Length: 280
Image 1: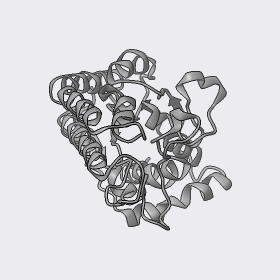
Image 2 (image 1 turned 90 degrees about the horizontal axis):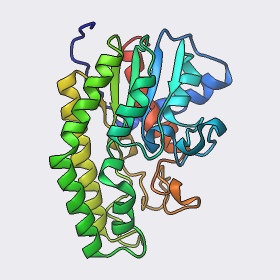
Image 3 (image 1 turned 45 degrees about the vertical axis):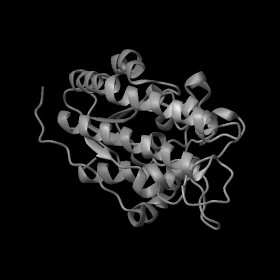
């Protein structure tokens, strides 16, 4: 195994996100900005596959991989030597371990990963806390269950997954893209849940991101904090501010996921900043 110094944590400000957000479209329009030397594997769940952004790749079937996901946009702009788009909607940490990691090329030099939300039963928590039929009691029960998993089950699952990635692609550098706050708290007129339920939902996101960061740092992986560029752009954003997260929409699976703007301006700059720092 090639030994690397611990990968730096990527801290990205909203200003950087907005500045870089326009560049991918230019790169794609003019062809590859420059051939990348990376052998890139994109792993994870629906946030990594691009659910909510549309333009799903037909061959990806129920995995719902989007050509507008942050992984696809980066690959289109930079032309890696190899691009394995393995992320799949609904994937848990165990799913990634069992179904995605074994398919990674041994030549992989770069991995991005977003996973953990479905381990906490993201859909149930959304239904219990944010949808019209949600109640305080149902939300509290869902939050308690999510916190139990966060404290007692997910740490070991993430550790096993991160170790497996390191073993499967020993020459790789890994960036863990975290989760944004999907909903803004301080908009009392917003009909998505209540301010109190929205705060509880975001608090679980904070706990999940903190776990991903701490566990990843032990393995020498970088953490890209998606909360920073998405700040203020979640569901229930103040009037005049674009929402980068879908509210309740059809098809329902796209609800409370980043839309195409969220992928392009929220997530992509986080990944792009990491690529530039590591000369990819």
